[in-house]
Length: 291
Image (cartoon, rainbow, N blue to C red; front, side, top):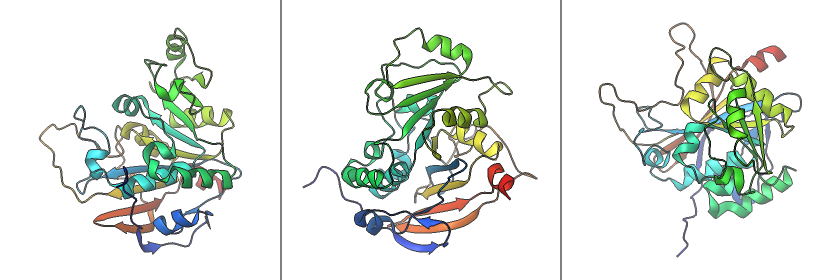
């Protein structure tokens, strides 16, 4: 019996005919269906992926139970989609809180779905991408352990986006060859999403940018209208909230409604067992500027 279950194919319930279909391997196409992604030749295309409960919780905020596994029920189909979205990405961006919850993780396709490692590798070769996406960790304080696998294993090229003071702190450690540190100025007391994208652009790592968390980091991208698409897995679980509960939705730290809510356009609905895999397109600042 295999160590890892092979995911069952998703059922496509709705798919808008937008963009060009990525030339997936036959196995990945059978599992996911058509994956249509823009080919961003002249600007960055920023998309995010989260899994949420029916009542909108993406993290229980309980030590040892703060990640997506408790939300998705360790769904192999959700992991397959996560791996696929990493496989077509040039860059994966996470916050320091996400790293703290899973310090041994490296944000590669096989890192989340090892049973499809060969398929993801073949896809990246066909797309003429680097072997792995650039892993970007955002940390205002610079309080990171540079011995962690994402920085020191050599499996990925990594970038830390921090403040000048954070960069000074980090440079007191031994900096691995595969890591670059960029100190950027704060805007309104924090590192802006725009500054993160600029630091990524300066690395010439590519234009497809995947934001994997945490919720406060994603909230900044929504606030600055720099998110083009949201992939959202809805798990058939209700977890509830106590009064004053710290459980999180996928966009935190900013409030948009009433008056400034972000309205998306539904572009995909897929089903895997009792989970729904949704995709929404948003009119980002870059999209508006291009019109």
